[in-house]
Amino acid sequence: MKPLLLLGPPLLLVLLAAVPPGCRGIIIPRCQLVRILRQHRLEGFVGRTVADWVCLAKHESSYNTRAINRNKNGSSDYGIFQINSKYWCHDGQTPGASNGCRIPCSKLLDNDIADDIKFSLVLGNRCRGKDLSPYVRGC
Image (tube, rainbow, N blue to C red):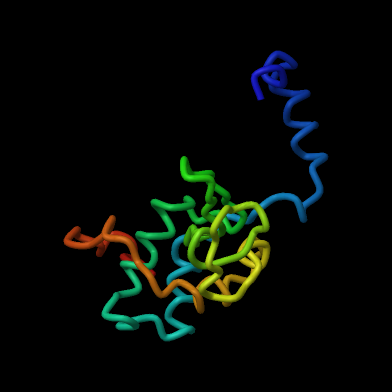
């Protein structure tokens, strides 16, 4: 991306605007995510609150539905909840993957997060024990 910065802000904005919408992830606004999670009845699901799920999405993907992060072990994490390709989804690139959810990782990168929610049964400890009320305040 550094060479693009040399073009200057106006030209960089034009280039970024030319990227087709389907190639960009959407950033789901926090309160919209709260509503979606409540509609899917995640309050209390597997002992977690909606605030837990919002916290996870914030810290794992910054609410980006198309987030992909590569890991040192050769696996990748996909989607708003960063579901891992070593254990949960199939990306065709991760050695020794088990595909526990029987889903292609690419399905976790669309703007419909219903499947992400369905397969987000494992929640990391990143948010446990923290005050999570700010994630749902005002929603």
